[in-house]
Each structure stands twice: as structure tokens, then as C-alpha cells.
Amino acid sequence: STAPVAAYTIALTPTQRNLPVGGFGTVVLSVTDAFGNPVPRTTDDTGAVTVTATGQALLRGMTASATVTTDDSGQATMTVIAAGSPGDATITAVPGANTVVPAWRTGYTPPVRFPKPVTLATSLVTVVGAKAVPSITIVGHRSMVKGRSIIEIEGTAINMDDSVALTPWLKLAGQPDYRAGSAVLRPGADGTFSWARRTARTAYVYVATTDGSVTSNRVTIR
Image (cartoon, rainbow, N blue to C red; front, side):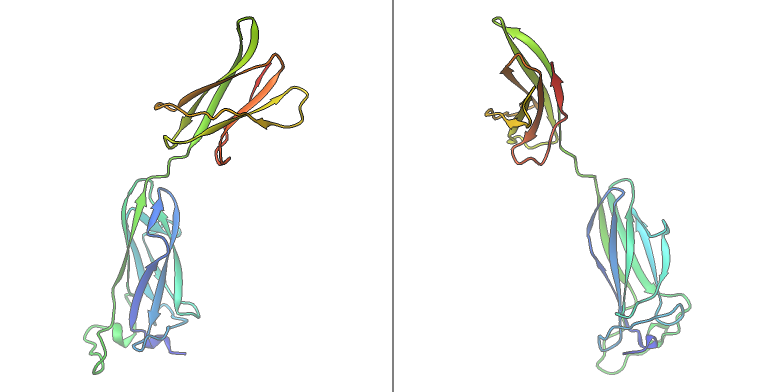
């Protein structure tokens, strides 16, 4: 394998370009020689790279800058920590301040037909707002209609698409399992919905999306 002193090109590759507020991501540092071979086992003075985070992110340990050395594959994976508010972050990699790598020192002249060494690599990461979490909340009560006892459910669906369909699930006293109701509930523009069922028995009810991905709290109506 090539020696650390032969380091020539620095590259940064983000694993995630968008990070949620307060989330974690990674950026991979790669160091190669003039022929494109990975440069492994770099040290603090030979082939080491200074990585800096600016903007809406920090590096592992909540630091803005770190000295990074490569592993046996010629790479190093760095943790990026998103800030608490949306915005852009830039991860920058440059040769270490005390580098002894010839290609990374001032005044270096590359061999004939070789490109100039790459001594600056940047990676842009965008911190985005946390994804809204969908939820369903219901309340239940019993009432009388035309002398008959019914149960009524009123609920609110939050952060859901307008086309979402909900299914009521009901278990009556003495029954072992919940059963899906035949009704399809469509929340209004404000997210509210309601459902009623005639029964005098104690009822246990919850509401879920038709695919079961979001489920409400469970209520007991006696």
C-alpha cells in the first residue's frame, strides 16, 4: 500500500445531505495519492487532515474542528451533529497545520502531466425542520337517541394528508378482540371527525389509519 507521506488528494462525501434539527449524520473523508490509491494509516503529522464545521452543525464531541486520520481503507467517517434550528452547514477539510506531506506544502510543483494536489474539500449539509409527526386523538361518551343508548367518538387528526381514511376499532364487553368497524372516517379541513354506534354495553374504542401506521389513544365508554 502507499505510504501516508504520499497523500495527494482530499475528498469529502456526505452520507446524508439533509439532517433533521438535532439529528446526526456522517461525512466520509478520503485521502488518496497522486495515482488515486487510498492512503491508509495517516498520522497527526503525515497525511492528517483538519476538518472544520461551520454554520448549523458541529462535529462529534460538540466541537467545531478536529484532526482526522485515515484507517486501513484510506478513509475516516466523521459524525455531524445538526444544530437546533434549520440552515446550512459546511464541512471543510484541509491538510493539518503541521503536515510534512510534500504535496501539501507551500511551493510544491506536481510532476509533469499530474494535476495539482487537492488540498481543500468541502461538503454542504442542510439542516431541515423536524418532520411533523402525525397523530390521532379521540374522546368518547355515551348518549341517548330516541330512547336508545349509543356511544359517540369525537377526534382530531393532526399532520395528516387531506385524503387520509380512518377506521374505528371496537371491542364490546365480553368480546376477546377488537373488530374493525365498517365506517370510513374522513377528517374535515380542520382535522376533526366523529363516529357513533348503537350499543348499551361497555365499549372499548380506538381509531387508526386504514394501513395501521397511526393509531389513536384508546377510550372506554361505560
